Length: 104
Ligand code: FES
Image (cartoon, rainbow, N blue to C red; front, side, top):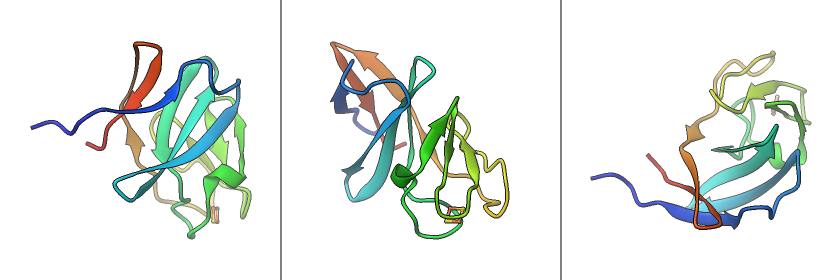
């Protein structure tokens, strides 16, 4: 059975290049609105235990502010050292004026 969808924000709640950390079932996640799309990824950097919510958005990438690695918001790929492990990405849909995600 598929995991349930969770409403995590109202559409329009986040401005462009904005992000917000949240939790579902103890999982620390990050909602990002960038380049006209919503993305949900792991909140914590894969390099060390540091919140990507403290970083910044550049196009469709999030930059970790501790050591400067970039991650692709769509694929989760680590684009620069020192991080060499992707972060997880989660499905997103927009419906009924809300942004939804689920833990697959
Ligand atoms: S903790 Fe994110 S790049 Fe090092």
